[in-house]
Length: 157
Image (cartoon, rainbow, N blue to C red):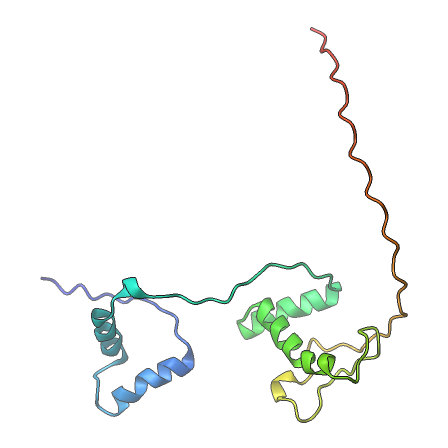
C-alpha cells in the first residue's frame, strides 16, 4: 500500500496547539500530527455532538464611520465584525446594568473604569458620547386596511 498520508489543513486555536505540543517536547509523542492521527483512529466521529450557541441575525443602525471602522479593524485583527460588537457590548453591559445609568440617552463615558480589563479599554472604535435629547413616545397609528383587489380588465386582442 502506497503512502497515502497527504497534508490536510485544519484550523486550531493557538492555545490548543500549544497543549498538543507539550507531549512532543516531553518526548511522549513524535509529532503533533502523530497525536492527531492516533486520536482520530481511536475516536468514533459518529458520536460527536457539536454544540454551537444559537445565533440570530439582527440589523442595527450604525453611522457610516462606525461601520467602516468595524470592517477595517475586523480585517486588521483577522476576526469578525460580530466578535468586535460582542467585545464592545460585553464591556459596556456592566455599566448599563449598574444603577448609575437610568436611560441610554444620558451622557456615557468613552472609557471603562480602571478595574475593567484592558481589552475593554477604548480603542479605534471609541467615539465621543453624544447626548441626545429625550425622545417623546410616538403614538401608534392604527393599521391601514389592506387594499381591495382591483377588478381585472379584459385584455384587448
